[in-house]
Image (tube, rainbow, N blue to C red; front, side, top):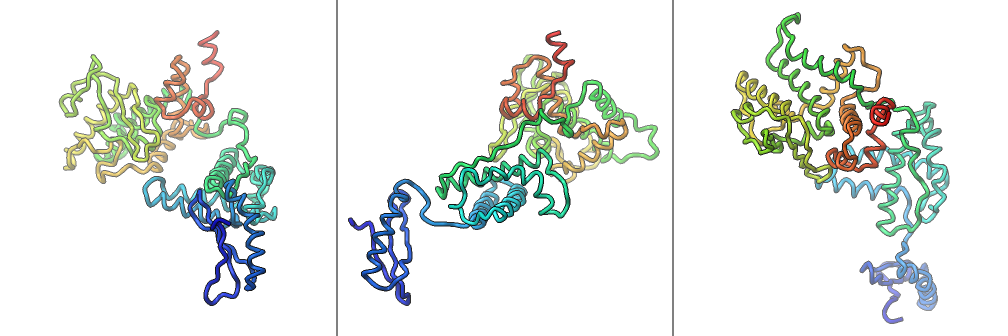
Length: 412
């Protein structure tokens, strides 16, 4: 048979084996023949070769693997990406958490091996994951929230995409995300109204200036923390950056301050302090490449004031001066990013003091407010999406929250 098939024996084993060569993948496919008789083994090898050779040539999987083993292999490969610095370990934990219920669903539907999965096998998965999975996984009744359900679906689809990429199956699963958020009332990360943003910004400013009437004297560190939070929230509103981009990525060297003629301002205390232009370019450089882009915005004065306050604070407490590699919104005492949870706690307190808690406002509302405001002002959706670091579709689905008043102002 042209050397494409071989019957082999191994020392210490009674059964004979057949070996085929897969030219495209440059590997051998070995199967046990279940007999030690040479004649019977040859007949079985020929029959097996006739059955398996078309699968090799068409790229179909030649071995049956369990769904659980493939999930384990997928997680192992994702952990290698963690070690390479491509993704964070928390992302792998999320994948594991979302794929465990899928394995339960497979068990309930007698899906053990990958060859048992057909196009329709996951038709009931979405309804089961939404309505019944919590009772099985946590012992409590309830329905999975809209966003959590879509996250579960995305992880299953990502895993199956990996299965197909490994050429372990040619089946296309019929499992899709549920309808868009616009069909349900948004409960979290709601964009500020103009009136509420004015209240929030006024309170942020008051907290940095009106300290004389406070009960106790604040330390320089506490005063700077208030100024830092004000600058952080204002910058997010003016630029539309993701909060973690501001806290973890941008450094002073990444900011191009502009003068009145749109020329770059040199990075030093005198030049930055003397310039009053609002325009700046924030170059977000993500080591993974995701979201890297220049962000043009009017946060120039805000960032210059933060720079000046940072210089004064460091000098007053004896810290090293600001360097080009210093994180813009980092903790000056440690050089590390401020914990996002701590910033969120401070912001929630401000909302509570203003009686705006319970309205769905979070730090991420800054991004939605920026996008909604820019769209209402008539800016190009494509250019706005480029500035925000995502597609027009994602912007429309997740961030745009135009109201009837915005539309009346434009078309009324």
